[in-house]
Image 1 (tube, helix red, strand yellow):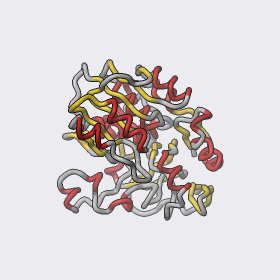
Image 2: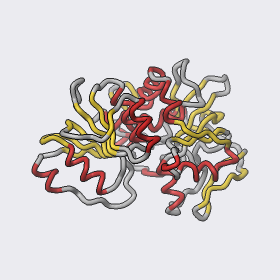
Image 3: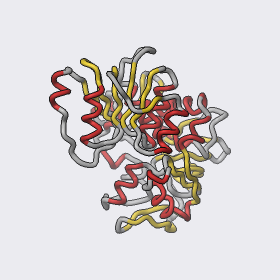
Image 4: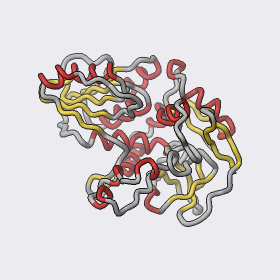
Length: 312
């Protein structure tokens, strides 16, 4: 089958054996390109197999599903306590990083990875479940009330996913966005632009020192910053604002569960409640053979790319 792999900081479509062995076979319908995919390719991160962790498709019986692309060990201290997103296996448990991912015609995963989709959510759109779950997980750390004010710094796919989660139930959400396309989507999601004043919480989705400083400046005394970005280099702590305001800083990674409900399941339900999300967030769809073009498009945020999706 065809699959997308990285060699010498370039993506290539290659022929690989179809996935065999135990697990559930998924015929891939959509695979999103994440900002972390772009960074891994650009930095020459050693990826042994097929890329892609934002994945949805169909089962042998035609049912549409998304994936929670994790294969935690299940027996380390973190898994036992329920925090399987911090499994001691590390990056080795992540599909598309340590395990063959979903930028391919098929992927085989353990049954635990399968996320059933509501009837009105298509597998063509459900690659959004994964980035939405990232936002659900981080925002779930906050103790927000309906009247809370929240700002989002950064309006890439994860920032806009956070915006979608927040505007689903809050009235006061403002987004700091760089590009016109991002600003337009933020407004259509129900958010304001150009955060001003004080906020109960700020979601940092840009992943740099300037964004972290902006988050600290916008927080009210006693407020909370959630680090939802993936950081690829060290950042400076805006220590004066953090200390003088007694701010809390929460770091969020991947997704897990709250009680009996997984974050990926909550994300799938959000897609069902807000069917406009796919049209707003997915800006480009390209065939698997056009993977190199798709990665170049995804890297050009100024040209309007938000979520670029490969469709095998």
